[in-house]
Image (cartoon, one colour):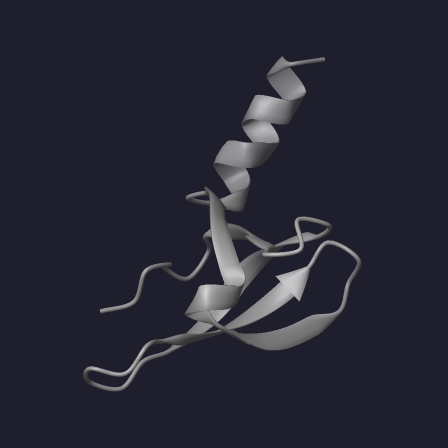
Length: 69
């Protein structure tokens, strides 16, 4: 089972960039890989161990940032 669902907001282990999981690739007992669209517009594929959870979805994150203004 994958750790992050499609639509989850994650950050790279470097902590410098955040993005949205757009696809999950999981096969049996092997760790999942994730296709992520980063906030700077780039896309990349990452192993689960390279990512950290930020939020469950972009809509919730956007609502929180608007209410903080």
